[in-house]
Length: 638
Image 1 (spheres, helix red, strand yellow):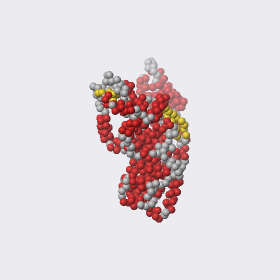
Image 2: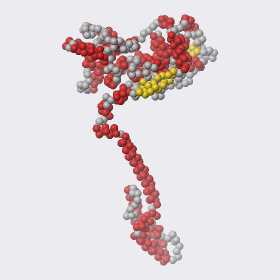
Image 3: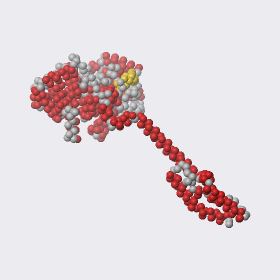
Image 4: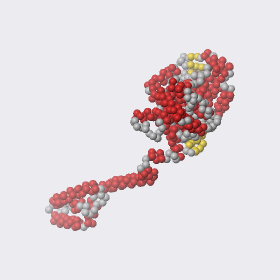
């Protein structure tokens, strides 16, 4: 028998074994076993062609058949011995071992990933003790905060959060767009730009980018920040970071020049300071007040905006006033311009009708110094009501802490009643039963308390609003509302501030009805029980016990919407020497128009105040003007 015939016979005999081998390999791949047991290793894993001799050129066929039979016998012996099975598997399954190695690596990576996740879960479990305890007690985070309200840390955190400032509401342009629409605001701005400036060919402005700030948005023609101010970190106390402004040497020299000009009431001297030091704070604040009284409201607002821009550019990296955790004490002389500029900016926003922006500035002003040197607490309720932030005002009255209970102040006594009135109307729209909360007093009850505590307010409101219905005449005939003075200086002063600040709110008919109904209920209560009058008199004496006016530093005019104006003829005494006034009267004689339409002026014999006025105009330039182009030094100072 030839060798080829023997090969064919062996192939036919071991073909079922090869099929079984393939099935076993597939089963092992699905199960992912790392090692095979002896029973799982099939005898078909042995390659039968290994039994054949590679040498096919043997001459004797008998010897070839004999050697083949011996090898078959050895093959049967190998099937019986387990050690031979393992040897055969190791020699014939190289491909299978490679696949298993890949599986091992994959399994090891999965195991390590699972172990890493378990370790991470264990770490989180160890760290989250509070979460586990709260889960065991089935108490939510809000419940735990509510239960811890009396603790000091929670109260401090609440005071931080209630005075946090939303930066997107600081921008008055955003509020105007919400009120009137973006198209109306853009058209108004474009019309103002067209009327206030003229297109000029061949004139180049300074090429520099101004720093972006939060409080105000700098105009393109403002000079670059000169770095004459800086801020120093003082200490951290009770969770607050304390800071103070510092002056550079150049700023100190400008401050000395300002004091000299202020001593002789020389506005031209102040204007000269601003030409060389455009971000001198006291000079900007003084010129802003001057522009306001002469009727230049926009110019005054620009001067205040420049002041705030300089103050913000000097902020310390740790100074984060929008979060309500920074203190800038008014007792430091260098910090005072910040308060004055913010208070004036707040009033300017109010005059523009941007009450929400004014509210955010008022919150910032109140958070900078817990002593409240500017009296922001006496106008924050007005801005909240005008901005329709009723829920915030109610929360503020509960969370904000001061020396006296906040509802004892005249403004909060009446404003909280108004706030409750609007909240009741909103709750009625949502649900009829929502306003039946026994824990909260009604708006009528709060108004009665306000009238019993501050009865003189009603007579002042009747005169200021004015209220001309007959019902008010009958109310004022009673002795309890007849007088417009309480007799306590501090209380009377705060009532004057409240009426001057909030009288516009009482022009609404629904609030007038609320006030008249509450006043009539007060009269009925007095007729039935006279002891309540004595009780409320004791409360007033306890709340405002000082014999002198503790709030005399707050001027009533500072809380007024009306702007005092002085004719410009009466301001000539503050314009410097008579020679300067003569030059100012003849200023129009030195105006020259060049071929490019650019207005050129000479500053050699002109007043500094006139130069300051014109430096704010983008089409005016100063210098020799030989080539008709702007002088570089003067352009940088514009």
